[in-house]
Image 1: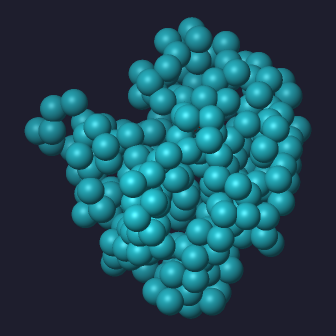
Image 2 (image 1 turned 90 degrees about the vertical axis):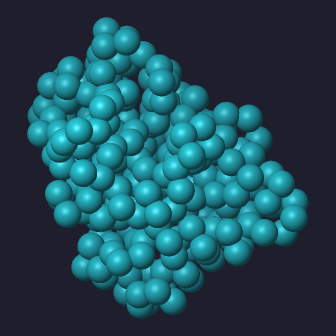
Length: 249
Ligand code: PGA
């Protein structure tokens, strides 16, 4: 009943021409995919060109970040209004790279989530623990705390437009994947947290992705887990062949 959502997070890669050539390849093989949502998240500089290239296809456009204000003196920032104007539908927020390198915290992620929803955009909110936190047995407490803080003040009716991505930080770009059972266990815990904050209905409908070294070889096993509703794919989304294989797991 939950439509799987597979998103490619291209991170800080691809010039406009490179982005266009990747998206042209993806269009050819993924345009017939109907039972799952496919999203590509290029860098800001390629969004406009990719948006035009995606017109009339099934593929959706996502951005990798945004600020929470509509406009104003915030040098270097991009607003939800600007993203909406380009035809962006999803926005990744709270990615661990933003939390680690740019000091983003749950309060900021929460402001961004609310601003996006208010503008009719759909946040993909990333949560997940570091290796030290996992080894210290803090995974559950940390992930629950992130979910509580990131969704604070978001109304039940808005949750249909929210996606959560569980990305254990130790699995991102490292080639180490959480086992599908372990990924499912933490994702089920996130779902239980949603039930606690909202109700069973919201818990059953909210989509939760797994992210962290998703590859063609492990996608099927992860996606077949009961609580995993898709993937946020970094490295393997930069080549058409591997992203296609993941989408068609
Ligand atoms: P990865 O990145 O697939 O390269 O591990 C995932 C992510 O950061 O979203």
